[in-house]
Length: 327
Image (tube, rainbow, N blue to C red; front, top):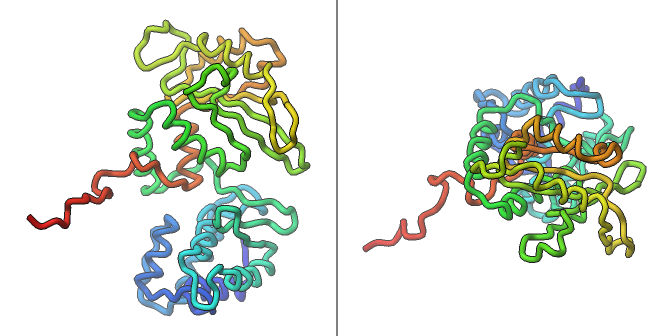
C-alpha cells in the first residue's frame, strides 16, 4: 500500500499524540505503543513524528492479500490509536478522535468505526468491506508463538464445556458469526446433535445457519477405547440429526434448517476420520460438513488477537492475593 506523504505525517502525529484528542506519547511510550501492536520497533530518540512516519511506511509495505485488505499490523495500529482507554478530556466517548482519524483515512479510501464491543474497526470505502485481521496461514510473531503455546497447554487440560465457552464462542463472534447459542451439556435431550448453533449474514444480506458439534480430544476412525480420542462413528448420528432438525430463530420468529455443520475437535481430526464420515453421508449432506481441528483453532484464535482464557495465563502473571500481607 502506498500512501501520500501528507497522510502518513498526519497519522504519525496521531500516534505520537501531537494531534488533539489523542494521548501524548513520549519516546518510551511510542516504543510501548508499537510493542502493543506486536511490532518490534524501538524509538531511537530522533524526532518523534518523523520516526513514526518512517515506521508507518514500513508497515504499509508489509505483504497483504488485496488492495482492500491492509497489512494486519496496520489494523492493529488503528485499533490501538482508537483504544477507548486512552480517552482525553473533552472527548470521553472518543467520537472527536474518531472523526479526526477518519479525516486522514478518508483521503486514502478508508473509514474507521467502533463495533458493538467498542473495538476500532476499519472499512474499505469503495467496497464497503470490513477488514478482518485473520489470515491463519501467515507467519506468527514471537509473542504470538508464546500465546499459542499457552493456548495449547489450556486445550490439553480444559473440559469440553470450557473449550466451547472460553475458546470457540469468542472466536466465532470475532469472525463475524452472530446469534451464537450454546446448548450446553446439562440437558442433552434438547441438543439434537448440536453443541452450538449460530448464523452468518452474507454481504447480500442472506443468512446462513451453522450447527457445531464439539469434541474435546482427537477424532479418528480407530477403536472407541483409545484414550484421549473419539471414534468418528460416535458423531455420525449427531451430525445427521444436526442437519435434519430445525432450530428456532427468535429474531425471525420461525423455524429454520441448519445449512452447514462444523465438526470441531480440540485435538486432531485424522484424514481417515474425515473420509469415513464422508463415505457414510450422502452427497448432499457431505457438502454441508466442515471440519476444524486443534491447529485451525489455534491459528484462528491467535491471529484474531483474542485474549487468552484466564486459566491459560502464565503463573507469573497471576497476582497472589497474599503477596502483600505482612506477618
